Image 1 (tube, rainbow, N blue to C red):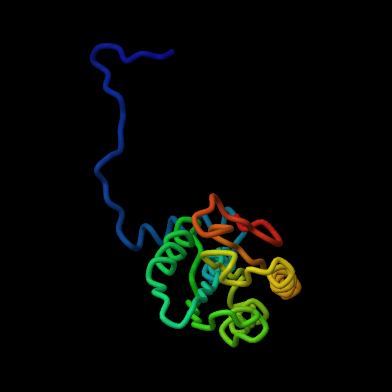
Image 2 (cartoon, rainbow, N blue to C red):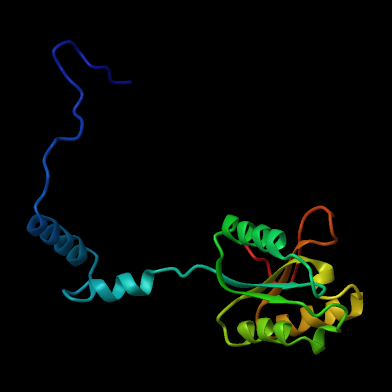
Amino acid sequence: MVGIESGQQRQGRTGTHRTEGELRRRAGLADAAAGVAPGEADAWARAARIERFRCVIYLCGAAHTDMAAPRAECTEYAEAFGWEITDVIEEYAGLLPPHGRPGLGRAVACVNSRTAGAVLTAWRSMISPVAQEFDEVAREIERAGGFLHVKEPARGGPGGVTTGRDAS
């Protein structure tokens, strides 16, 4: 281990500030060293940009259901994963089967059109309390190239259930 002898000081960052011209010159040198031709650096930066994963939040309940709490929970959940929310669809359809709900159809269409990669919902029952109907919707979303993610499998239940490919 190398120590600092008396009379020597550890070198730290100097207080120099580089001008805009100097920064451009240094960036040009770095680009040239990396084999990037002048003018191509901006194209490389755009190509290297990573887009955030996108999801649509779908909530469904009876006619006078207050959706504020599940909407907030789903929003916080998506933000915790760094997901971008492209749409929030609230539907007051009650006991209609999944394929009779235009809002759910819009959520699946978001996955079909690649504006979202997942449908996020608060509870499994918001898709359907019937396992066969729920599985059918999940398969439809998977065929579209996305997945259905349930924040909580049952009201008050623990954890989340993801169908399809892994979200993270």
